[in-house]
Image 1 (tube, rainbow, N blue to C red):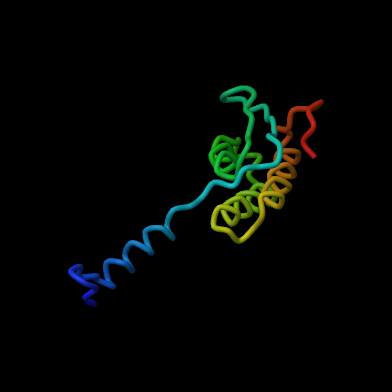
Image 2: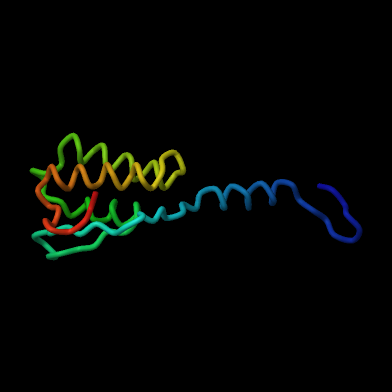
Length: 109
């Protein structure tokens, strides 16, 4: 503890506050939304890494292959600051295209 004037500052409390701030993930918006056709909910626009992760939970089991896992990992990494929004969007588009969920006629590339 350090005394600064009349206030007592606890370094342990400051460290806990800093750790709490680090635990909060920030959403990573895509440059342009992606439209998918899901059997359970119909058409859905996905505009960020967080939305992509939520959406991928609704994908059919048959569509959860290698590209799904790569997209899931890339979107999660983008939320953690390890990947860019562009990388996450590209991986998500590839997985959606592989699964046949990408709405045709919409610009998604």
